[in-house]
Image (spheres, one colour):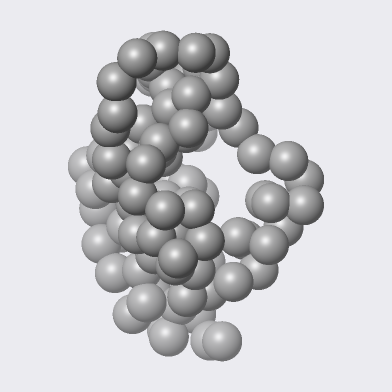
Length: 111
């Protein structure tokens, strides 16, 4: 896949910082997070840090999702969100196709 076709695939996720941040927070939501902490850089070139208390992934699950460009969350995981701790209630995931995982590229300055 060329850089151009990749950009076409992920569109604003890698070019608009507002969209990228929303995508990263949505990934935390989809991981069952109840708390998300964002540390903004004080200077250009410093890191944006996003931490959450979500479920996380095994290495195997991460590699499968990362390597599948057209990942279908609904088929693979269903619409529900899994929580690390037992809690009542149900919420649906925002993500459907795994494009949001590419949001950090928005802040790298290169693809």
